[in-house]
Amino acid sequence: MNSIADNLGTVTRRIQKATQAAGRPDGAVSLLAVSKTHPPSAIRDAATAGQRRFGENYLQEALEKMEALSDLSDLEWHFIGPIQSNKTRDIAARFDWVHSVDRLKIARRLSDQRPAGMAPLRICLQVNIDREASKSGADPDEVPALARDIAALENLELAGLMVIPDPNQAESSLRASFRRLAGLLATLQEQTTDGPIPQTLSMGMSGDLEIAIAEGATLVRVGSALFGPRG
Ligand SMILES: *Cc1c(COP(=O)(O)O)cnc(C)c1O
Image (cartoon, rainbow, N blue to C red; front, side, top):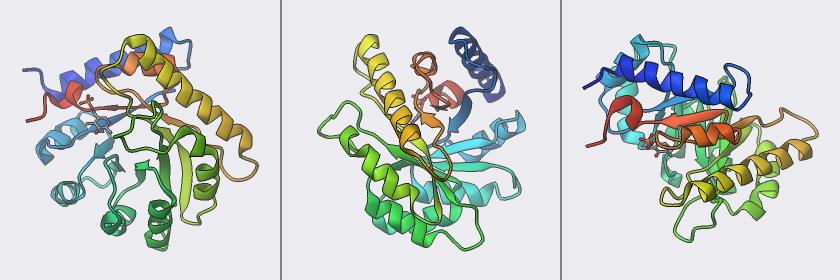
């Protein structure tokens, strides 16, 4: 089995190659290492190899890992899993980013519960771009209004949009989904008249990061290609 450091090198080269192929500048795409179900030692190995941004899906598991890794002070933590109302307080206090916000009620709670003195919590609005009935994410039609309301919340910064497309679709329709998300971000950028302009397109995973980067991803969320299969 390859080491995590080897995998990190491979994924980094994939990202660089796809970024260049798309004619985009070096460094245009950052890597979020998705460490769900993997032990703190795996995160430590990746951190030793230079990785700083980590994504977690389950709050309790994430808090335990943060505790075990508290000697590593410069890690950036991203919450990417479904959010229940009773979890927002710890998410607001312990994370730097949240990618999975899809309704205003949750955004309001995160803003209200962000501790005083911390930087604004960076938010990606999750979009159900394929309008799958069973999936989380805001309907694309709701995105402009929801984005405006989230951007107005005091302790949040609307950083951009996130999508988890249906993995069982043909490459051409996957590509079209990513392209629609990029179009929605462009609309938000045009509608932003004051405050920071949202820049983040959180899209692409181990199997499809090249397609996502070709369509404008600025952050890819990669789990199994770095840490191996999940048990
Ligand atoms: C697990 C997960 C990933 C990583 O998926 P891989 O296919 O293992 O790279 C990315 N994003 C989200 C939201 C996830 O839950």
